[in-house]
Amino acid sequence: DAGITQSPRYKITETGRQVTLMCHQTWSHSYMFWYRQDLGHGLRLIYYSAAADITDKGEVPDGYVVSRSKTENFPLTLESATRSQTSVYFCASTPGLGSNQPQHFGDGTRLSIL
Amino acid sequence: QQPVQSPQAVILREGEDAVINCSSSKALYSVHWYRQKHGEAPVFLMILLKGGEQKGHDKISASFNEKKQQSSLYLTASQLSYSGTYFCGTGAMYSGGGADGLTFGKGTHLIIQP
Image 1 (spheres, rainbow over the protein chains, first blue to last red):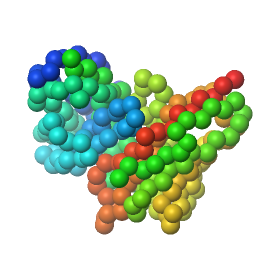
Image 2 (cartoon, rainbow over the protein chains, first blue to last red; image 1 turned 30 degrees about the vertical axis):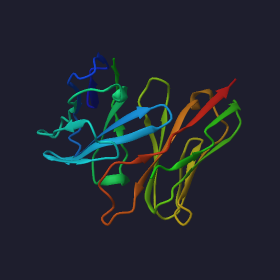
Image 3 (tube, rainbow over the protein chains, first blue to last red; image 1 turned 90 degrees about the vertical axis):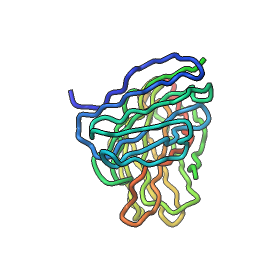
Image 4 (cartoon, rainbow over the protein chains, first blue to last red; image 1 turned 180 degrees about the vertical axis):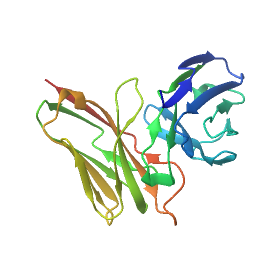
């Protein structure tokens, strides 16, 4: 079925480890986004991408790396995980230009860093 | 800057009405509204673009006052299924309509009791 999928759904790792969260969409949407959701903060933008090989920082990019070699995939990597990065991570996509398009969210990855 | 939502939480009886407000300190191009149920992804409700339009479907509608940089979400004759956390997401005014992600408010928790 078409849609946006995230993997894994749950992840527990240790401080200092590298972890990659995957996001895959089948709509061929141009724009993709990564958000983190924490109690008291709502959703905060980490990185976004307008197309393959085009990425840009959002509000809270420190400690994260993204890539987009293919339109359908937008992985998020925590190079050296810290406890403050424990959060729920959502990937989203939109078909067209910018903020006049609805964002479609994946089911999220619940990441715990011990 | 993060938009401010009010109230933070509201408890209603089934059939009562609710209004959720979203205010921004910067010029807006668009306002999105999403609903999130516990443990699930945010689900798109509607977008309002600059121009002060009002939108709605079923018993949920919203307005956008561009001059005041405010949006309000109206839920009439609330149903149990309306329970959840409501987020507004704002898109900034850029030339060309914007190309980055949304800035979300912290959310409004809505509880509908039978």
